[in-house]
Amino acid sequence: MKDSAIILTSGMFNSRNAKTAFGLVRHSEKYRIIAVIDQNYSGQDAGEIVTGKKLNIPIHSSIKVFLREQNSKLNISAEKFARGLYAIIGVATQGGVIPNELRQEILDALSLGMHIVNGLHHYLSDDKELIQAAKKFQAKLIDIRKPKQAKEHAFWTGEIRSVRAPRIAMFGNDCAIGKRTSCLWLRNACRESGIRTEMIYTGQTGKLQGGQYGFILDSTLNDFVSGELESAIISCDQRENPDLILLEGQSSLRNPSGPCGSEYLCSAMAKGVIIQYNPKQKYYLADDERKLWSIPPIEEELELIRLYGSKTLAVTLNSQNLTKNELYSEQISLENRLGVPVICPKEDGMKELVPVVKKFITEQKFNQKVVK
Image 1 (cartoon, rainbow, N blue to C red):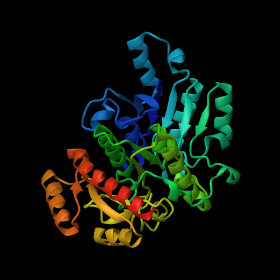
Image 2: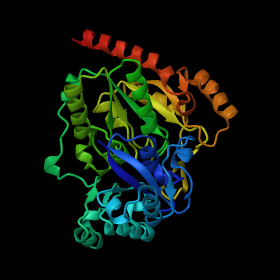
Image 3: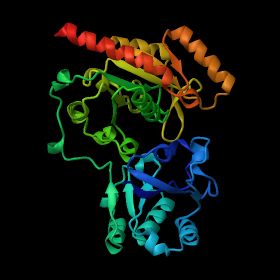
Image 4: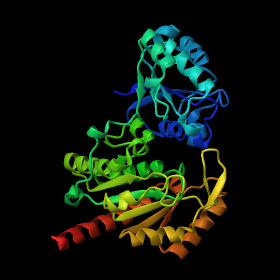
């Protein structure tokens, strides 16, 4: 049974900062999202902003207004309704700090007995003011990004070579570009086609959505990233016996503010890659959205992946800032240039990639037999 939750976005709902909120509005196997709290988008349905379709997830300007609405609909007191609800911080802030307005929303939620779920680098369980409020109102502070101690981490062992299920990594040409969402959609499309598929989460949103296998990469000591990735894959392979394992990528291979990806190819031995690509985005974006560094041509990404010993199977397009005509023109152009399938997942779904995935699985099984 899912826990009921609201999402706190503090005026940032329809922005790059709110990818956790967007992910939870789209899908969660752990929480039933009943509202978003955001003063700049109140009165709208969160689903219409995220998916273009109404999902009956209303946006309210404050927790107080949200509870007043529940009182009129359910004829239940605010105190009784609020106690035990989860309030999820659905935004990433610059430096992971808690802005004053968001802090006040957290305090308001705690005063009503709501449990706070936090994915920021600012740990609530280290914050004296919030600790006192949680204790006073018998609420929980849940810091999902708080790292384990070094002794609890897994170190890379090389046992990844015994994993039976082939791996596909979902990469991208920058952060916050839709890697996790496309990965989830591909998992669902594969399952619908009879391919037993599991996904390894590597970020806070994947965990909040109910991911069973994974870890939060950017909160893991660098020495243990490869080991935690390997450990999650091994556990998934042994327990689920899947036909395929998808790996949620982080950042991009050459993002200078946080390059990431070689671990998936070297340590996790992912022989297949799908690249999420935004043709309109020409620069890596820093937290403050400054244009610091040009994004290399996508052809170079494919070549770099090849040099790592893996193969780019397809490109998935992020259609942000593209008209429909521009999107499909770019799709045709890229297919001709790159020689791989190019898919528009938001517009057309992921079913077109299923034959590509099936072919990849067959090839990997053949390669395993040859090696043996």
